[in-house]
Image: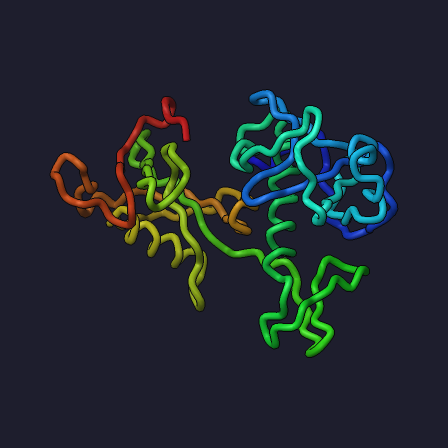
Length: 266
């Protein structure tokens, strides 16, 4: 999973300090990130590499988090133009970036970047917000509203039938993800995670499941989610929806199929 970066260690504590030359900098655009990407190898610019084109980097860089002994910062403004080996790439490349722990860093930084961007103005009174400086938060100077990063609860479930695994594929109009995937979805207001599993499975593939079991959890920063992962068994009460019947599939899907687990690649 994307968060499995051992032996590297991620520290989310908010302890801003003056950046060192070797600390790394994220500069994001609209679904893009400035990096050196030679598929699948990825590098991010350091403070020392940014300084020649933007000397104010040490004063303007905003602390994000730390991995091992390296601090990661974001330069929100100005958005620098491409220079030398550094080019803007679509953030989706972070899913396959190597080494994986740098991909995780870029994805996690993107979630924080998006949250700051979405909280430029107060949702209560419309006043421009500011960062207090002593914590990862945004505060309204007018009404005092204090906002922290929001994590959206969701679920993902591996539905099995013996040694077969249920996979789905979304239509291009519904999702940019082109590969097969497990059933997943957001938890609604007043709903438990277990209820979410049963509802999402019914909505997406029209099936009932049983023997629900918790597996592990996974942060998914592209959409600010934290997903508990479950396994469940198909009850086989009703047939699997099939494109062969020339009937429309539910919820923007283009394919639903069972595949032997030993050959599945999601």
